[in-house]
Length: 210
Image (cartoon, rainbow, N blue to C red):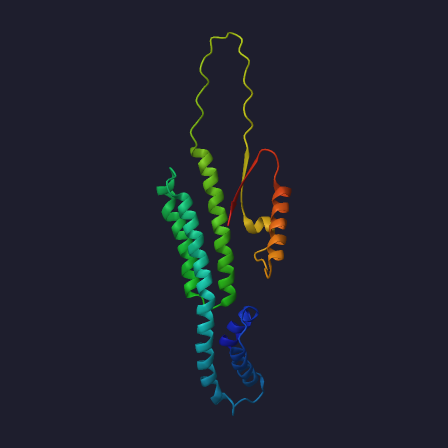
C-alpha cells in the first residue's frame, strides 16, 4: 500500500506502460476481498516496482538537480566581488544545498517537481536581496563644490531610475515554447518584443534573468 501511494502521488508526472502494468496487478490483488491465493505474487511485483520506479526517479532527479546547481551558479556568480560577498556566500550556498539534499533523497516525483520550482523562487529572492544590498552599499554622492557665483542656478537633480529585477518566464508568462518552423520562431520573437514594450515605461531599468 505504501508503494501504491507513492505511485498515486506522482502518477501525473510518470508515463511508463511497464510500471503502470505492475501497479495495476498490485491494485487488483489488494482490492479483492479474499486475495489469499494471489498474495504470493506480491513480493515479485514489489521487486519489479522498486527496480522500475528507481530508474524513473533517477531520470526525474537529474534535471531538477541540474536546475538547482544552475540557479546556484548564477546567484554565486552575481554575488562574487560584492562588498557583502563574504557575509552572504555561505548562507546562499547552504540554501541551495538544502534543496539539493532534498532532491537527492526524495522518493516522490511530484515532490521533486516542487523542489525545482522552489529553486527558481529562491534564485529570484536572492537576486532581489542583492539588489537591495547594492543600493545600501552604493557610495554616497559627493557634496557639490562651492561656486563663486553668488546666485547660482541650481541644477535639477537627475531622476532616479527604478530598477525591476525579473525573470524571462514572468515576461512571457510561460515556461516553454513549442517550435516546429521558422514561422514559430518569428511568432515567439514578436510576442516577446510586444510584451517587453508593454512592460517598459520611462525611468525604468529592466534586469531580466534567464
